[in-house]
Every structure is written in C-alpha cells, then in structure tokens.
Amino acid sequence: MKIWTQWSDLTLPAGMTHLETDGFVPSASQFDAIEFYVPSYMGGLKTIEIIPKMKNLKVVHYNQAGYEDILPHIPQGVSLCNGTGIHDVSTSELAIGLAIACRRGFAEFMDNQKQGIWKRTTKPALADSHVGIIGYGHIGKRIASLLEMFETKVTAFTRSGSDGSIKIAEFDAYLPKLDVIILILPLTPESKNFMNAERIKKMKDGATLVNVARGAIVDTDALVAELNTGRITAGLDVTDPEPLPEGHPLWSAPNVIISPHVGGDSGAFQPRARAMVSQQLQLLSENKPLLNQIIAAS
Image (tube, rainbow, N blue to C red; front, side):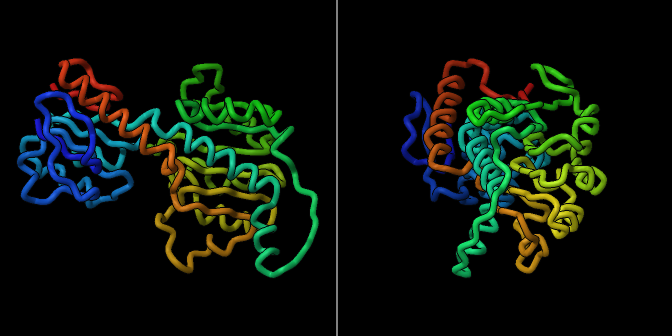
C-alpha cells in the first residue's frame, strides 16, 4: 500500500511504502499511486481539492476534528477518518487561556503596555464564574475538567442532553446568568450563527464569549456591535470570515483577543497526530476497523 503524509519518517507496517513528501501536498505524478492519504494539517483547500484525482485512493485520514470542509471532496467508496482526540489538550488549553485573558483584562493591559501606561484596574476572575460550555464532546469534557481547579460553576450544553449536560434547546434560559460562554460545537446548518444578535445582546454585563469552534457559529457583525458598547469581552481563535482580512472592524473592536486559529496547533499536536496515523496504518495492515470513521467504505 502506498502512503502519503506530511511526515516522511513514519514507521510503517510491512507491505506499506511512504511516497516522497514535501510536507505540504502531493505532486500530480503521485495521485494515481496514493492509497492512504493524510492531508497536511491546516493545509487548506489545496490539500483536499485534489482528493478526487487520486484514482486508487482507499482511505483519507483527516487530522482535524471538524470535517465539514472535506466531505464534498471524498469520492464514493473511499473511507474518511478524522482526528478526534488529538486536539483535546491544545484546544482546551487555549480555551482556558482565552477565558482567563479576557476575564482579567489582558487586552487592556497589552494596549496600556504599548503606550507605557501603568494603570491598575480590578477585573473579574475566572474563579467564581458560571461557565457555559456549548458542545460536550472530547474537547468540551476536557475544558470542563480543567475548569474544576479554577473554582468555577460549569454547565454543559448538548443537542441531546447526554453525559449530564443540558439540552441546547434550554440554553436561552441560562444565557443571561452565564459569566463565560465557551463554544466548542461543530458547525452545522443548525449551529451557524448560534450566537446571533439576539443572544449576544442577552449576555450578562461583563460576560465573556470564547469561540474555539468555528467562526460562523457567531454572528460577527453582531459581536462587533456589542463589543463596541464595552459591555462584554471576547476571546476568538476562529472568525467569520477567516482569515480575518486586514481592516476588518473586529480587529479594532475593544476588549477582544484574537488568535489565528491555532487551537489545536501547538507542540502537543505533532506527536499525537503521528501516533494516531501510525495506529491507523497498523489497524489497516491487520484488517481491523479504523479509528474515528466518519465514512466507512462499503
């Protein structure tokens, strides 16, 4: 079996060969040979739009948790697996970091630092905050576990209300009481603009919105308008549009911290991603079911 990943030094089971790689995208001359394909992490459209050209492809392993962008490019008869589990540590760490930074006023402190201004202000703490986690999968549960040490009250929300969570249908009743809202749910037609203008306006005075899910889950224009009132704060690892273009009003909105979609992309990602791909190849060699199958070839 012929393998293409961004890593040329994977240890492969017998009978598997790693094709030459530049660490980003296969060459056109390799398309017909590739049977197991791992698009380079965060490589964008260039790494997935070529998938239908791989005529002997059997499996695509996508090292991201969200897969809505790659689905239209998976041919019939090709299995698709995703990277559920490998981003938990990095993304949950960033979510907590953004929540703390927003609550404690880091955006204001950084602005003052650039101007050489020493100004003490008392900000709300993450401690004693009521935190709502919207989405309670692997990463949502990891965020909840980390929040325990900060003496917060956590309420989780899911569509089904499973694992001790509250149904998302009941979210609006809790919304005005939440000090921090952390979004870590998948982007679907139902979740698009979940935090719309109406919900953003109902956020508690001084509340914080953290988005480590997908940018389109938040109505950007509505968020900018509310940030400009100075009433709420936000920590965003994802935006809509993305990348956020130069001159966009979100860049200059007050009380917002923006990171460029790096939630899962830390030093903790590479070893976990490599280990999962290696495990997938071993399972494949033993004719066993693959991990995290989104589409199983018939």
